[in-house]
Image 1 (spheres, rainbow, N blue to C red):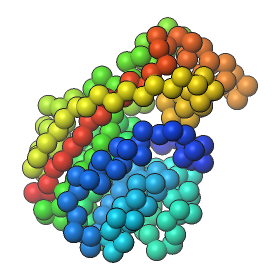
Image 2 (tube, rainbow, N blue to C red):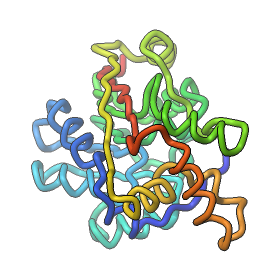
Image 3 (cartoon, rainbow, N blue to C red):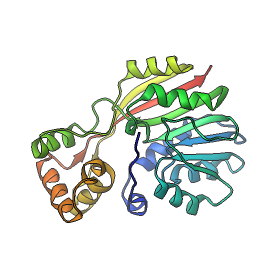
Image 4 (cartoon, rainbow, N blue to C red):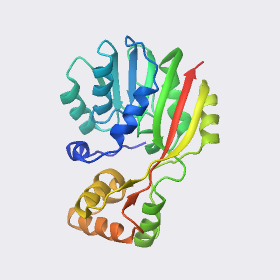
Length: 244
């Protein structure tokens, strides 16, 4: 599966609800503070930095498919953290297994969740916990309808999964499921300029990648104008599971 690059610096400068999602994941992880922890889809290292602020003795490993994100993470986290540019749908290049896996706002970018979860299970010790948050069933309905109006088709390059299919994928990959749930978490952005930047950097990258640079701003504006309200209607899929 091909991964796309991100504007990592602009991404980190936006009013991201991802910060609260990351804090929620950390709250649910039940760490003692000495574990080897994999941040799957680590992005700019924001959540890894928050983990190390809470548990300085934890040994953090970050994996992301974007070289720009990993470069930003290395600047933020330093050379003592193990970081890899790697595709989560391929076997992971870890040197030893991990005691826990965290993931924030990453899994919905991967269409094959069975393969994703099997790859994570393969690098987890028995008893290791998976704690994650990603986009879930029903997410971005407003944006999706706007894209249909502008382009004739909805958002692509994402997989917003429901509870039952997620439970089945986890069980099939070797996990005992503690909980899987959907939680609406809408974000309203009334500032038009901020909304346009947010849409371009966070939501519409897969649509903009094939457009000439001079056409991208107009495309984002047309999509924003077609939205019924300036709301990014997030629905979070939250997972807690244990490797058998």
